[in-house]
Length: 317
Image 1 (cartoon, one colour):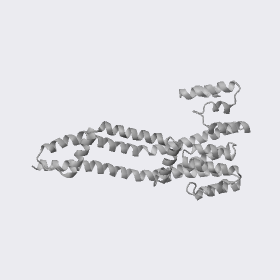
Image 2 (image 1 turned 90 degrees about the vertical axis):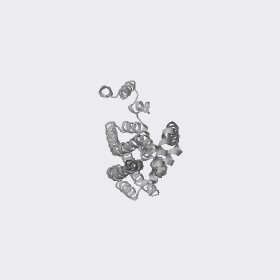
Image 3 (image 1 turned 45 degrees about the vertical axis):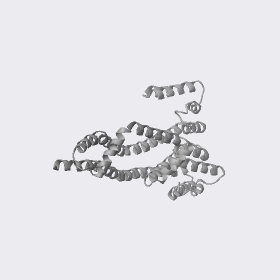
């Protein structure tokens, strides 16, 4: 089956990995052990799911759960990224117009203004001064920005940096609410998948903490894992962190615990929050679009007005 899959895979790197997996299994290795040899491609999440399927004799069911999980993750990621395309294009347009004006339009018009006998307004003087400063110090400013972004990126890769920026993003109005919804959807969906695949709850919690992609939620989930190992119900631990896990999340988990269908309740939670992600993304776009357009109008309009004011005086002369 793996050889057939390898032949049908278009991605060269993945095709080679799948082919190597088939050789490992032919050599006597189990599927989970073969996957574990390629952690950069197959995470512990997938390896553990396959291992649980092998132990329970339900490997095909585990693979179906994994396929469903991948589809949900891809759908969630694609919708989130797709929603950011328009704001990104508007921002790119803003910076492109500003660059064009600062480096071409304003310098040419400023020469005409300076050669005339018209008194230059203070606002126009400021705009021309900023344009000249940016032109003269382009390399230095660009280098400083690149260095600053590099330092921020390096700090973000550390555990302290991830925690610092994670908390800031979660406290940001509107964006923070959307991020919480995304993290809750990922957590509920991955935990449901792992439990359905036959993993123990403590192990499922540990693996889910890596899927969430938030250091804040990862720390909270690992605390839950430790308490569950002591025999504490998940819902009881969740209720201790209302800023991370809202009451509706806790109540739905509690219902799942009482009815013995925790995996089903978690999947219902995931479906609920994925719909909330769609609504939250739409609301964020509804706010961003007019703000970005107004910003574009104010910046470009203000710069043009500052330059055109003395030009009108020149024409009047």
